[in-house]
Each structure stands twice: as C-alpha cells, then as structure tokens.
Image 1 (tube, rainbow, N blue to C red):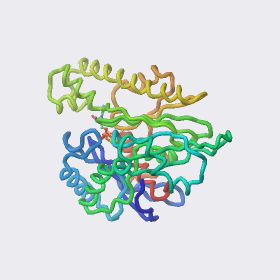
Image 2 (cartoon, rainbow, N blue to C red):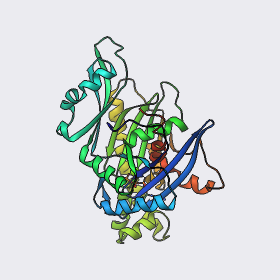
Image 3 (cartoon, rainbow, N blue to C red):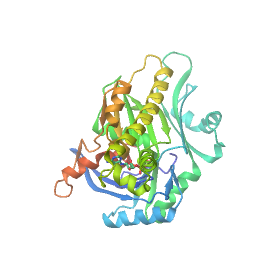
Length: 352
Ligand SMILES: Nc1ncnc2c1ncn2[C@@H]1O[C@H](COP(=O)(O)OP(=O)(O)OP(=O)(O)O)[C@@H](O)[C@H]1O
Ligand SMILES: [Mg+2]
C-alpha cells in the first residue's frame, strides 16, 4: 500500500484474522530465515466480522497481550487485510514506465474501482512488458478502502506499535511461497487460504500473483452447519469440529463433508473462471493454508473434484526454528495458521 517507505529494520508481523491474531517475527541470517517469535491468540466471534474490525478495544487488548507475552521489543509492525475491502484487478494500461504509472495511477484506476477513488489507497504491480506491440501492458491494480486501513493501523498504534505496512493476505502468501516453495518459471500454483470467515484464492505464475478472488466462506460455515444439524451452541459445535469435544462424530463428519463440498465447488468455480479467462492457462498445484484447511477430508475432496494435486502448505519449511525455543511437533501442527504471518514477516527485506 502507499505507506511510508520501509526501513530495513526488524518488524513484527500480525495477521489479524477474525478467529485469531497470529504473531511472527523472523531474522534474516546469511543462511536464510530464522524464526524468533511465534504466537497466536483467539478473538471472540464478534470482534472482527468479515474482515472489518467491530470491537477495536478487544483487538487492541489482544495485541497488547501478545506483545507482552512474547516480549516483543521492536516498534515497527506489519499487518494485512483481506475480503471485500480489498479490490484486486488485472487491467490493461497503455505501456509506460513504473514512474509514469505511479504518477497517473489515480486517474487511470478510477474506472476500475467501484468506490470513490478518494476513499481508497491504490497500489499496483506491472505484470509484464508490452510483448505483442499493442502498446498496452498488464497491471495488477490493488485498491484498499482507507477507512478499513485506518481501523487496522489504529489498533496497532493503540497497542503501542508503529504500523509500517498494511499488506494484502494474497501478497503476503506470495512472499511466504517465495521463501519456502520457489517455483520454476512457467509454473502456475493456486493458493487457497481458508480462514474462519473468508477464503482467499490466488494464482501465482512464476512468482507473481496474477489472479485473486475472495469468497465469504470459511471455517465458520463448518461450525454453523454442525450447530444446525446437532442443535448445539456455536462454541460446542466448534469444539466438536476441531476434535476437542469428541461427540456426535458421525453427524459432525457428515456436516463437515457437506460444507467441504460447497467450499470445493466455489474454489473450483474461481479456478475455472481464471482458466477460462486466460488462454492456454493451467494450474499445476493447489496449496492450502489457513485454519480451515484442517477440516477433515477437505484436501482429498478438493484434489478429487479439481483433478489438481493439493498440498497443505508449511510456511516454516525453509525457516530455521531453534528447538530450544520452538517445539517441532507443535510448530508442524499449527503451521497452516501461519502462512500469511510468515509472509508478512519477510516484508521489510523484500519490499515490493
Ligand atoms: N482441526 C480443525 N478442523 C477444522 N477447522 C479448524 C481446525 N482448527 C481450526 N479450524 C478452523 O480454522 C479457522 C481459523 O483459521 P484462521 O486462523 O486461518 O482464520 P482467521 O485468519 O482468524 O480468519 P479470517 O482470515 O477468515 O478472518 C476457524 O474457523 C477454526 O474453526
Ligand atoms: Mg486469515
């Protein structure tokens, strides 16, 4: 986003999700990345709804608790957004340099953004040069509502830190992939990040995000279906889903299966849309992340329905984690939650 230029100093990353806040801090050493801090704290269901902060006090206090618990010393923080406050579109502009586009972006972007241009922060990435001599170039246009950015920067400020970057989940995931799963040129991969309320889908080609989409669906839908079918509270349904409360297993798995089917259908629809819109395209692999990716049978179902290999991502694959501070098993188990946060934690060195 159009926020102050990054200084190359340590920052802490917060993935502020509707279900929990994830904290990651990493060091870049000569050998690569090293994990220095890792934390997660749950939020009550009403604090963040569909990507908007409703109860900023609770979010601020949860951030403060995390900062204290993990002894965060740095002052700069990096965070991200997703969902309907973010508009990402691939558009065609007259060929020009990055500097020229930066000067005219407000004006060029206006026709593509469904909100008043003064209400959004605009960023862009030039995807490719004008190879066909059409005098046009492809650009990823990113617009984020200013009031939503303000809500996120405010909770970070209130928690005593300085928000240097507010990124977008999909781009954070692109950075996470870059350090853990470097792609070969020409390889297309799809990222499916299944949160509690939002699932974001993106396609990365040769390391660049060329397509994104978000669906207002996630882990909450699984819980709500269990709640409906078994007539229990949301809290009980959540515990049954995650295996904390081993009850009504047969009904729970039937509820999970039915929502996994719906979610898979939506993911497939988005990928088909991408494939239909870009001639000769294909997706080599789907990487799942987010807590919702742990739903039983989801990975297998998605693989079957899309006929594309599916793997749950490990954002710590190429990240050194000292076993004196981090339990290897726990780290592996919680890995899907930290995809976005790990990507954010690399941001200051790989400024875009
Ligand atoms: N073992 C499990 N089985 C199924 N679902 C799980 C499991 N563990 C966690 N989840 C679900 O993962 C979701 C939380 O994932 P995540 O932390 O990625 O979401 P979030 O980032 O807080 O939300 P969002 O990005 O949608 O705002 C919750 O819906 C939770 O129930
Ligand atoms: Mg999330």
